[in-house]
Image 1 (cartoon, rainbow, N blue to C red):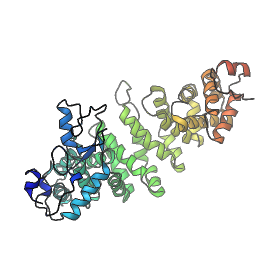
Image 2 (image 1 turned 60 degrees about the horizontal axis):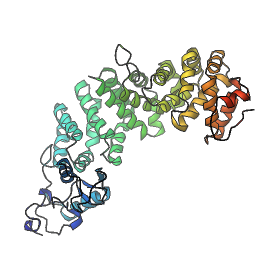
Image 3 (image 1 turned 45 degrees about the vertical axis):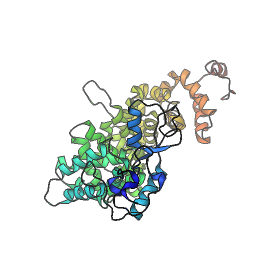
Image 4 (image 1 turned 180 degrees about the vertical axis):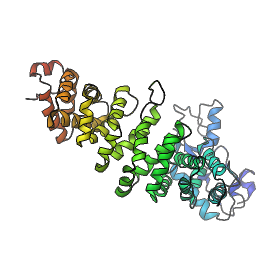
Length: 433
């Protein structure tokens, strides 16, 4: 195939190929080999840049079929993208990729920037900031981002910067890794590379991330560090999870992250969400529960429930883990007049997992340990609590949750008549007694 075959518009990375390009690899608009194939609702696939330019010009039809578009959503054609990548690597191993935003080629730029990061005695910050800018740029092709993320040794090299003492370098490395870990366009395989690089020295990674959480240049840097903790925990082995869970400073900073961010007591939703996710996972490690309680996890989770700043399900899971130890039950009961109504109010707002966690919390302090303050607070919430318990029992919850809910109904001290009066539904009523 010569260049004339495509009207002189053959993409630079495929110039010089002596093989025929499959027709369905070409964008119907540009006739170039597609770099980021996406499909319209008509089923026709285009290169993202070309079709986006068409839509941004005010067109409301499919260029190939000229049909009106009821939706302009662009769905990545991952299968075709992989086929093109495979074809490019096998059919043209010596071809030169096109220039990109970070250098002469995605692969070449990655290698050069990673070399700069790893260079002994050199300041890695400029290269790291360039990598972060490239990965964060919405105009950069997803294919190039993934090529950079999976470049040999890239994840390990950037993660190694976390062990340095320079705060700026550590924060810059955290930014690069967090963008990869949180980006929707990065393949899961590449995200796991980041988690594996962090897990290789989990204790050191936890200490470095705790340092950024404690003294990062701003809230964004602290959220980035928490995202890496979240990625590490999501892909970690039990031993690595235990190492992270036992990092006291890290747990303390995650609890601080879900707390007030200013003098007015405001909570940042993004920070709360990622902080809760990390703490809910750490709470699953039994040895970490009492330490989390000591560091203030219970009042922090209750604050989230009362302010609607984050996921009720995650906050309830933290409280469920907390009441599994004596210190946690004491912390919940100490502020029972706030904690119990908060748990009751969010019982049906965190999905089935959150609802069962709420029942577990109430059952632990009100029924099993019969704390007077908790029982009184539950009784004061009987009107709403009763309805929610009945709803839960009819919603297909686990047998254990159903049994706990049944036992809690007796705590609310209401008779059968008031049960039905407070529960207006066309579904079958379950009488508690």
